[in-house]
Length: 246
Image 1 (cartoon, rainbow, N blue to C red):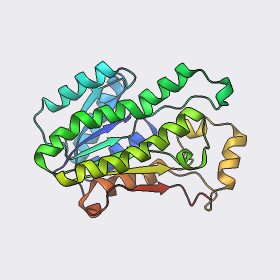
Image 2: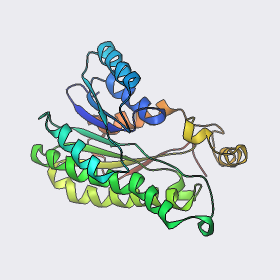
Image 3: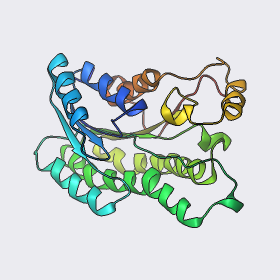
Image 4: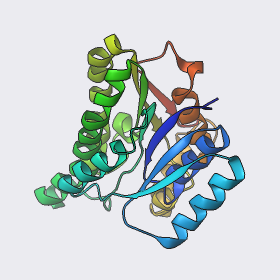
């Protein structure tokens, strides 16, 4: 589904990002696999994955909390002179659940930097490549918390901001043949999801029609679909992969 395409995927070290990396490799994409810091074991994993599926995978260390580093690493990616066909803004961070009254404004700003501002900056930098080639697919990872407020204020609000940005970016970039969409997962079997208290997990599952957690690969399959030509007439949308959250 992605043969001949080059993708940039953030947050590839584990969870949903790792599943998206594997899904894109299996479907024939060459990949810039972004992780927060250099990791030899991850580099070896990428080599094996690339060999298994006869694709190219380039590990990139990029700390999304550092705006300067985002700019430098984006330039590094563009220096390869490859067309960027797909950008998957997957990387994110969640802080412990607490009320606004107990939350420092600095924590809110830090969360927005990772979950909203840096993905938007990376999109700004790499979308120029897509604009020149007049094609591309940009995918953001939002969250069911954007709809139901099921996480803390900074995460819920940041992921809601992503949905608004997706809608506007689709309007701005559509004339260049670039599609922009989001995926909003529900509770998923990842370190982040499993880090919630048992009570919070039970509450989330009680509102889920399928009464189970999502699997990372189920989220990744949606990302493969949105990156492929099978979704060529879909833009400005947020696809909820949440088991029918009520």
